[in-house]
Amino acid sequence: MTLIRSLFAAALLAAGPAGPAGAADLTILVDDLKQADGNIEVSLFNSAGTFMRSAVATRSAPTSAAANTVVLKDLQPGEYAFAVFHDVNSNGKLDKNLLGIPTEDYAFSNNALGKMGPPSFEQARFTLPAAGATLRVSFR
Image (cartoon, rainbow, N blue to C red; front, side, top):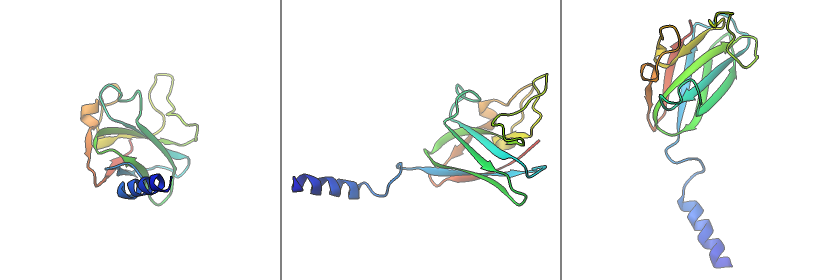
């Protein structure tokens, strides 16, 4: 039994530190915040088929008068796009008017703009390297 424990311990040590292999962090810096109430909400997508439907990661961070940064940790390197909005009233959703037009500020990776709706995944797509990345977006 001691031999099995020793082999198991050796295997764990050989595997290195805890966490996914090749995990990267994505830091999103948000500009043009009009007020310091509420939260910054981020949804991250990894394909055109899931864009704006099924996020692979989400994160919420309280707003600040100084700097607004949201960090998504331990992501696999690859192709992604994100949507971010300022949830002023902290209700967990992007508020819209009767016509379906957002009443809270929002942005997409690459500061991509859509026509009569969100941009395409291709317009918002970026590559997250293994070393991680810091991206900046501006609310509109």
